Image 1 (cartoon, rainbow over the protein chains, first blue to last red):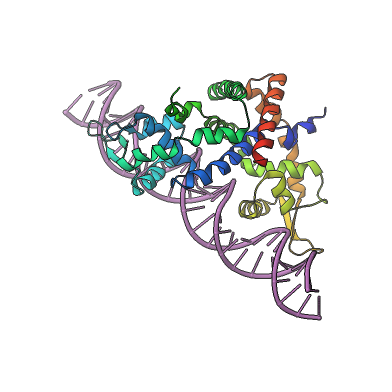
Image 2 (image 1 turned 60 degrees about the vertical axis):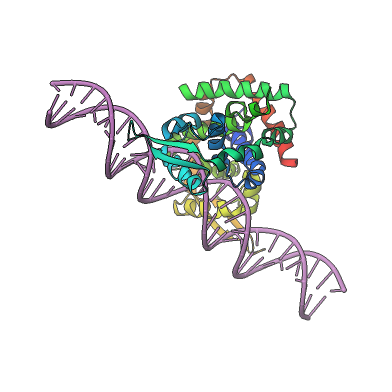
Length: 149
Length: 149
DNA sequence: CAAAATTAAATTGCGCACAATTAAATATGC
DNA sequence: GCATATTTAATTGTGCGCAATTTAATTTTG
């Protein structure tokens, strides 16, 4: 095998991940559009829906850690979601540097419309539960390695 | 398992792919910056480097098919690369609708500086050749399924 | 306690991705 | 041959993702 061989697009893991992520997005978008969400906004909602109420809040920093996004991405994104009345933003009175985010009633309700999305998307993959699990384990291991290098 | 369980971020394949793609980008960017390339521009170069000369050309359409990108992404991207003197763009005289892209001498030379990137990035994954191959096969299969659904 | 360092968010600027539209060239059908 | 349809790029507008910088609040340190 020549060194040249390695530079082929088809050989690259990164290109597969890149293509799959785009493809994943294209499958999610029409579904999420019905809820008025983009994919990134959906990820934010997934985090907030876990609380499942309109009282507990999460800081932008905590959200950023969970989603691996910085304030440069989250600040404008959360502002758009606030404008859509999905969540509210307010400074933490204990520490005025921190901005807290909390679901509105509307944002909380939206969960009902999203409840079937994971199953729907799973069916698009055409995979079995076992195959999915195996792939998830591989990707998790890769994520851990690449985060620490 | 409750339906609710499915909505957890940690369970989602899409989130793993999304996170890995971002992580992959973060590893590529400092390396590619030395060549003055973004990740997407690198992908374009990978396609063009295969020709390995400054005479054969590829249409924007063909490039778009290989990379799964449309003209809305490629047109401005290729213009930026033309400005950097990596490639040249010109209308096909046989069919004036088509725009052809071709490496400049500079673009062709840049390949030498990129020759070790795949090996370097492979080492970041911490995987064996076999593990990489297995993962690639899984992802390819998923790509095929999701393209046709 | 005051100066310096750290932390959290916001802002700015750039480059994708992509939906939707537009413009121009070519192909097709009658 | 000409109207119609299709094809190809480019353009416009929106929303990320992120590097770099800025602003403000808090913590640390001498």
